[in-house]
Image (cartoon, rainbow, N blue to C red; front, side, top):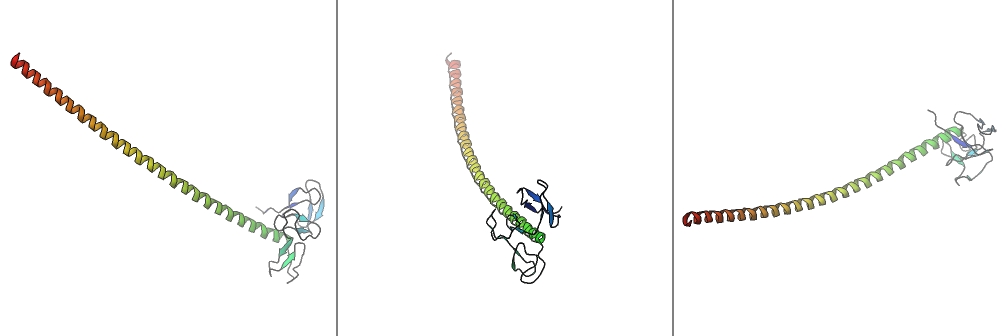
Length: 177
């Protein structure tokens, strides 16, 4: 799958993919025919037919870096002013696109790490809350169990007292009765 190189048509300002078109491009919307001899903004890839120092769309500088010597050149230059190497506008855009993709992926990675840390913190906090609730539940269960045991003991003593009273009554009735 080829990388997309999106530029705006200088006539209708509609975005279009110019990857693989060469220097001659026909806008699929307005049929405007133009040559890719102008300048591309390295930040937002806005296309300018006339030499411009600053991108109107994003405010970035319109320049490109030579892949051979790292010299700064205007985006419309075809030859590096420092070393004479050919400056391919598509190669420049592809380099920036790859860097933008790398930056985007790194940003997403940082975001995912922040989200993961926040989720782990929330999970730890929730686990502490659940442990506290469970501890309170266990305390309440132990209290109820002790109360039930005390009630059972009271009932056992009362039943024993009743049996003792009944036995005494039976003995007294059989002796006197």
